[in-house]
Length: 297
Image 1 (tube, rainbow, N blue to C red):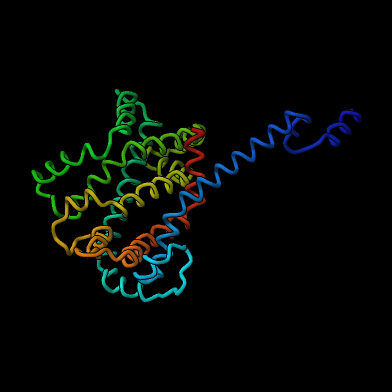
Image 2 (spheres, helix red, strand yellow):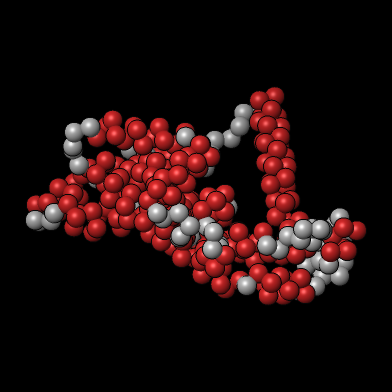
């Protein structure tokens, strides 16, 4: 027993070392190649954002003449002028209203639906769940015309509700998939114990499943809020009243019919994207945990 304890204590900890010789050399080379490829991908992915950030602090003349990402004469004048021309707060309220109501609708409706698919037995549950998964592979552009025609018949085309309803409906497959996997990971013993205490399904859902699935709920909220905030096509087709335009539509008004002021457009894009970046960074920890839990599920 003593020898066994000594051997366990003296055993090396941490990941196993790669074998010596040619095998170790190939492993080192493979790590270097993967690191270089990932670094290259990161640079390619970040370059458009960095160019936008750089152009927002340049004059139009410098954007055309200076291709460097570092402005020679940085100025806040472009951002200030674009802020005033964009009427940010008016359109911000429209975007925030559509995004918040859509996100709340998705979280409330599809968390309850995912709980039903995960916990409650009912006829046709498997077939209906698979049907929702199939909808993941339907391109959004295919549904654009039917949505517009249906909303026109219902009399909701042209208002914000005509945006919120399709956004909520389109989020169903992914939301149900992620949340159902998160609810599947909750131990059945907790639900059984709550039932013994006399709790009903609504109380079990609200007090046990929702708190334990918080990372997945935050993930779904972010995956809903970001595309809703940035949506352009359906918003452009649906809204006719300029007073109800969202920020992506208002950004188009910054384009001149004769010349394109790249610094103004990039400053407007930066102003539009900052709120959603702040939202993502504030909930990043929950987002990562929610995706990891969904993959494991």
